[in-house]
Each structure stands twice: as structure tokens, then as C-alpha cells.
Image (cartoon, rainbow, N blue to C red):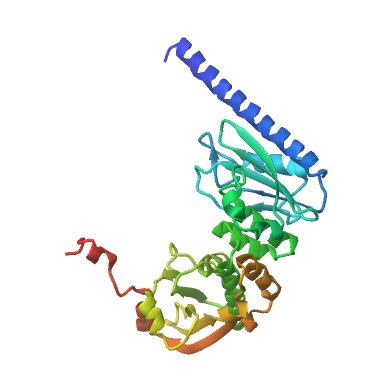
Length: 324
């Protein structure tokens, strides 16, 4: 490589760094303006910041440095419990939301790697419950409106941090995540792990609860401790009990034995007419899972039983004509 080419490469690299610093400065200024629009100051205890930084990439680069910027300008931190993250795919735009819980106003900043867009919204529960609210809001709040609004109100209502971590992974808050949180708390209370034991969770039927199980019980498909087995509507109707939630096996690998339990969740008690009322109506019960979770059956688990529970009856590759 000749000297001229080396100089050109260095010049391009410096230019890209300069451009990124300019955009970071624009976002910093947008955060400062957002605080003024909210009539708030750095470190105010009624502030919460939410972002998808660390999950998304900006101009091909990971976005963790924006977290420092948010903390520096708002005073919101993970340790204080008022800096929250929400999961998005890596090509999603960078979003930063600053919420003031006493006024229910929220400034949202969107950045697509080239342009910064900022707007203030009223995301009170009353405003969010108005007909067509979710369809009327545009960027930068959309398409993350439901995520940001539910995160903000859960935080304002004092939801536990481990519950918010479940919502972070799921990327929004819903009744299904609340049910999964309660079931995980129920499991850890009634069936705590002893030395040499591990959890295996069979998600059947499958719904949002299973993302909470992954976070709280450390069960994942990749570690072969969470198995997803969907049920058809006719299979659900053929069950001997309603509101089925899943099957838990507490397994001792060394002894090749364990105990199992089938759980159900009382949706009749949780149900409300409005979706937001249902979500936030469940929050006071997060620490009282016994009021919603019921054991349908307890049983011994043998190696043969564990294999049956965790092996799908239908091979999907059979229907794709990919079996011998």
C-alpha cells in the first residue's frame, strides 16, 4: 500500500469519527432541549429515561456510548432504577425517551444515523386510552409508543426492577409478562432449587409469559432448559383444566430423577375491559402470585418422562419433505 493510499484511509477514518461526534453532539443538545421542554433538570427524581441503546447499531456501530451521554445529561442511571432499556433488532433507529411522571409528559428523540427528530407527547393513561391513540401518534414515538408508554407507567407505579427486566427483554409490558413474572415467583417460592438441581420449563401453550421465565429462571432454548410446544385450539379445548400455562420439571442430573408440576393462571381474576387497566391492575399482585397461580398436578419425573415432555410429537421437517 503506497503512502497516498494510507493517508486517504486515515483521512476517511478521521472524517467518519468527526461525523459521528457531530451527530452525538446533536443528540446531546436534543436531550438538553427535551429537559427544558419538560421543565426539568438533570437529576430530578421524577424523571425516567428509556432507550434501545446497546441493542441497536448506529451507522454500523454498536450504541453503548449513547448510554453514557444519556446518564450525563439526565442524571438517570441503572443504579437509581430510572434508566430503562427496551429490546429492538440491531437495525432499529436509536430511540431516547425522557418521561416526567408527575406531568405524564414525555420527550422522544429518534435518530436514524443521519437525522435527529424530537417531539413532546402526553402519555397519561387517559390520553393513551383515547380511541385511536396508538394509530394517531407518529414518529419518533411510533412505532415504539406502546413500549415507551407501558415502561414509563410501570416505572412510575414502582414496579420491581426484575419485573422491568422481563419487560425489557420482551420489549414491551403486557398482561402476559405480568403472568410470567408471577408464575416464576411462585416457582421460586414453592419449588426452590436444591444442590444439583435445575429447572426445565415446557412452554405449552406458548405466550408472553415464557420471556419472563427466561429472565427470572435462567431457562433458555439454547441451554436446553426451555422447550416451546404450541397447542392448537382443539388441543386446548380437550384439556381437563382451563388456563393452562406450562409444565415445570425440577431435575437432578446426577441422580437422574426429579419432580414435575403443571401450572395454570387465573385469567378470570386478572381480566379487565381495557388492556391498560388489565396490565396495571396486575402490578399490585406481583408479590402475591398465590392469588393467581394454581398447581394442577404434581408428579415424579423419570428420564423417560423428561424425554417425552421435551420432545415435540411432530417433526416440522417431516412436513417440509426433509426427512428420509
